Length: 235
Image (cartoon, rainbow, N blue to C red; front, side, top):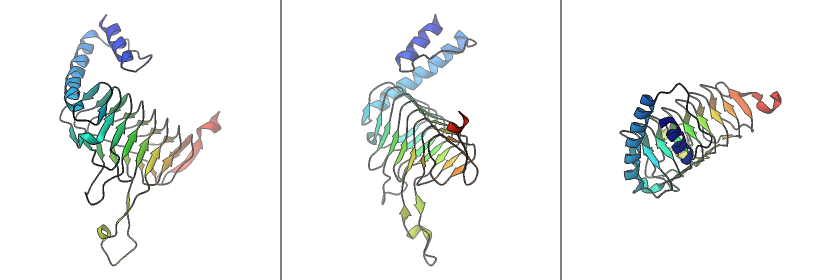
């Protein structure tokens, strides 16, 4: 009975056709539901300070969320334990429905207030694993149905360095932005650099460093990343 009720609740929250592993025990579900209740209570408090929130918000323990009025979230958004978000930016942070940002991940929109970051958009059904880092200086757009493995990093700024007689920190920055299109999978510890557009349904191998754009359905790997194959060519 508890399993059926849990499935019904999850499906009402937007996860259509969601099922539980048959091996899960009722005592395990009680623990899970107790933890989710604590997250929901914390989320209920945080929701009052956001620019917009259209559904349940689950907040883990010891999260640090700065400039909440710059954040808009959709339905069923979950932040794990120790997540840090600095939302100070020109366009703020917009997060879609059914998004999870797991433990110890960091979203940093602005490093110095002399030059605010542009903004971040995260689509629907996005899963960001533990220890990910998203630097928002240029605009960062993450599409629907994107999954990121643990330790993925995204950078949307480069320092200028052409003048050899001046410190790099005085030469300014270049910001192009990053686009991760729908359906992409970024493997663990992948690094996406400024100026990259990753075409929809692409796969980035673990530990790859992506410093240029790739078309849809690409599988890329290496340092710097190179095209290994196109998923469409396998059909």
